[in-house]
Length: 310
Image (spheres, rainbow, N blue to C red):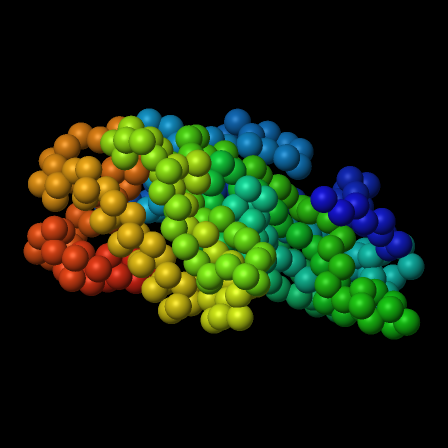
């Protein structure tokens, strides 16, 4: 990890008090069977780093299927104090508010701008900050932060200071219990290797978890065609990336079907989070027999497309 030193002022506790920052308790939820279900965040208390366990029996949250929604309202009573000599930017500068989520383990991050404002802008009262995180992109944990950043250069002589992060207004760490809740994707940087490949290293698909130690889709970011995957646009999934994921699932499914036939996939009670359980889930709505490679390939592509577009 690179360490950086900021030559500019940063957001600290004293400044938070000075600008009159207030917030409502954060809301974390997901939708299941048409109903929105909320995680209990009442015990998070004050302070920056908070932690929520996402998979509990009472929630039945599944990161491979469910979108996670984060929302809260914030108020900055004296936002003018962010500007000028004692502020973060010049008197005629511009500050932005954004929400970001990232996962180092999954090598994924995404930032959503919420709004921007100047010293002359109206009051920032009950500003909604929300973001929806799609399924299957994270494993182990992820962090969600509400940030203030420089929209305009902090000083005219340093145009590169545009985009500088001043600090976090809120941060919550979401821990995903277990490691079977996401599609295991590993990234490589080797011009001599193909664009993608699948590795299957399990001994028993009914027991071994759907995890990178046992099965993985490997993406080569240095391949000439990697640009068509649009990895920098994640979590938006490009059409080509959908094709790659579908093909990888098809390959994994064929190998699982060598161990368990199509009827067993439908009726067997596999270990939760296992490879066979994951493949059973992705093929449960395939029309016709999953023993037909043609129908299986077509059905998986349809399933993947619907899940990412839904």
